[in-house]
Image (tube, rainbow, N blue to C red; front, side, top):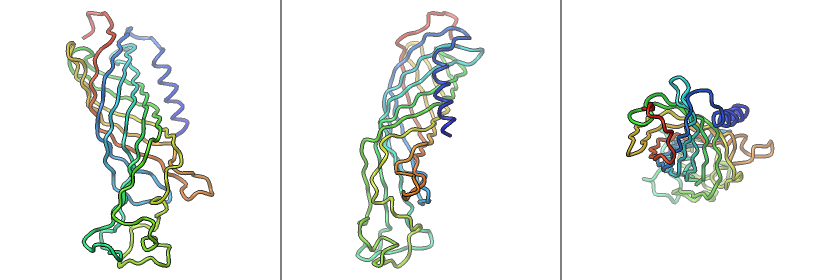
Length: 260
């Protein structure tokens, strides 16, 4: 996966400089916003549900050529994103009730982490460039910088009675997993990187600009915790599913009346 990451980074650079088809110098800028479903790939495994969050930021796009029917471009974004994980603590069969806790409440734990994310994509589109619809696919590396984190739970995560390995562990049932170290561990690695790719549709109007709807998937190659033999987790990478709307307007447009 790391080799693929390097290859994608190289392809983005090549697509930005190569010119073998119909010449283009279109440059557009705009804003994006969307919804993120995320979790963390822990090893050993932590049972999870997807955590919801928001994302939004700035988008730039440079269209460099049209090769046969493929419209080639490079896209870069700078985004604010809320990601993390939500634990599936209880099994469906058991309804544990910890002591000193409201019996009607199931245990709940989630960790939301805020990042600045910078994806850089090589993009291929098919369809209309100036007026009409276009289908597109884009893929490339993504980099992220950790800003802060917030934990939400309805129990004291540092209380021994909630730790399955403690002599004071007191349940009338059991947790779905005995892996609980992540509940009290702060993020160790502030830099994140991985591979992102998406499919979408774009509607363009010569006067109004470009409106895009995209579905995107991100697979992190970095870990939020240490992964050496001395560390608890061997893997702790981000995975995100994103649904995003983007609006772009042209700053520079190729002067060619044949472009539709």
